[in-house]
Image (cartoon, rainbow, N blue to C red; front, top):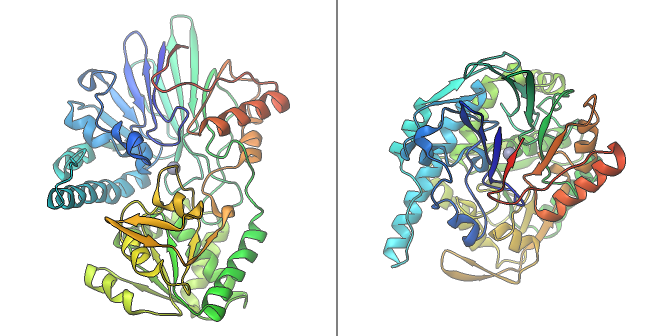
Length: 459
Ligand SMILES: [Zn+2]
């Protein structure tokens, strides 16, 4: 059997792994490349295989760096099934059309300024891709091809996220392949912890935070309280929070509720300026069955009591623009998470030059994104063709990640009853993947490999 690393090899985006047995060809994930211009250029490159000859796709979760090239795959002739969880299907229905829409807007803007930009796919391609989605609940085995059995396990990363366990019956043995997808940090609110897996011959393990541990959550919450007090009481400006529509936004609001309830923060005025995040909140509420105990409890409590967090949803662009008039006392949560698109760019352009403003960064910022430049303390940034001075305070809170940190990855790996024969560390920048490899060797005696982009191996 052959395995090709078509993306997320020595980088965190573009997840896509091609498996070829004698009779079947399938992909796990088909993600968008995000970040620098060179990275994004890979979205236009020809697939290294013929999409028409691909039998099916297994999708671990809805984040665009795992799902965002599916429409292009379909536009290139793929017509098989896309297997994923029901919650992921619901999220795709929001995320993929939004991705196509943002590209269309970008293309129109580029045309006006005489720049060159072609959308990777259209809304029609998205509709075609969504028609191919076949939802399969967690833990229910299915057979996408003869002699092949797949089970999706809760990965605890975002709503609907899955670890793929694949068994393939060969002539005289069964091969077990496990693709971790993105794993969540255990003990986080709303979602359950990643499911332990005990058997694999071949393991593809994510390594986003393979070289470090998150700060303890308590300390991060202390920092959040301090940052919000400084921002709202001392600096008396506006607080901007670039947020990923899926997962992080809900988690952030959850903490604000918890902190006000505990009396650690006074009443808060929060504007959720992201129609997509609003829609995702509706989807999340519909999937109550996936919540952990604590979240169920909080949701019930929430239904009974008045909340000190006044949450307003802005839908139209006009309402979003009106937020520019706010000078103080407001927390504006808007996408995109890495500031490379979406409404947050307008808010940043407007508020970054103001020394009263605070920007709170709560998620991973890939190399080459505007968010990363802010984290790296750039004094000027370029937004929509303009140089904008950065006078705002930038606060980076590292503890909110939706990804397992090094220790959590190692403890998840500890569940395997024996070391998998082949372990590939993917979805991490080289230093993260390599550091995780060293830790797994030291603690568990595992031999691991960090594949290169496009590498093809026999498994
Ligand atoms: Zn993810």
